[in-house]
Length: 163
Image (cartoon, rainbow, N blue to C red; front, side):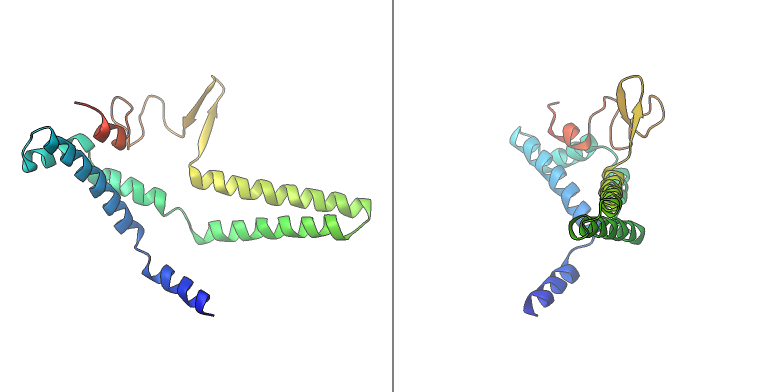
């Protein structure tokens, strides 16, 4: 019982996705500003330069929050249905000796397993396969993702790259 209460308390005390994103962005900007300070810039100038180098912080913040809050009720329901299907298929496969029922169990396990993988892949970010041998993020042609700059660098790459 104590373990259950501790788990619930941890879930309640868990910071929101907005707080986590703000802390992470602040950390990266602070680290770059500290690097500039070690190079000899003043604290205010290094902070301004780090923020300018990082890019549009508010746009990146919104994008990170959107990505981080991908867990919804629909995803939970889909995962539950696919897990149920996988479990029932496994039970049918192992407990019923008839060949036809075994095949139904195999199909149910395949549907459940592939469904879980598809939901996971969707949450990780949809990828569109381009027959011209490139795997692209679901973007329009020649438009970089919002978190990337003109040179294709991520915010982390921009912060950590040399001037």
